[in-house]
Image (cartoon, rainbow, N blue to C red; front, top):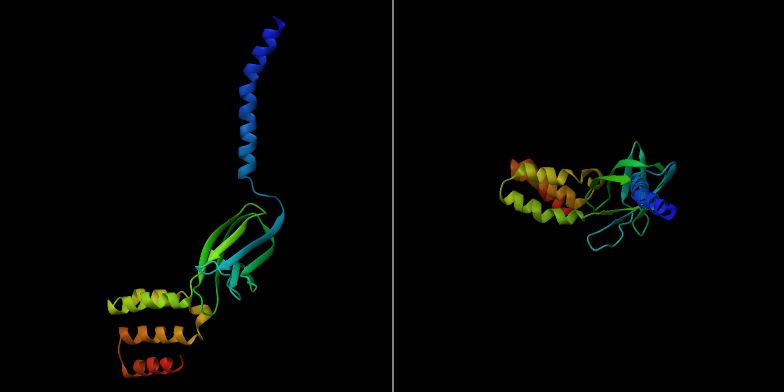
Length: 178
């Protein structure tokens, strides 16, 4: 009789044990780490090749630059959601949200070359969709203001939108610098 009571008690308490064990694992999986850690990431192109000298910002003046392999590190970052932005000469800018909840996580940012925008811009210009073309080129302004190709396409959009002799000269001048 005593063995039956022990077996009954075990079978009644075992499901409760499993539920508590499951809740413990679920809470471990969804909690943030405590303290601070290094938020590490890599910026690469569409082929997976690291992008050097790409500026990445975590906000609040916290900016770093990728090394020759495209790797960046922000030290002493607390767990949470962050808004990463970045750009580099000859590259499109990036703007993404990142959840940093695991000290071992690595952020991967894939970016496009600035040149990848030009066929789309040309297509929009042929369709006379100037505002969309301006919106696309303006997203890469901060890091490419001195890039001759960027300047050419910016001037080309202005000229196509409202042709004038002055704008024509700007386009031709930009073209000479390429």
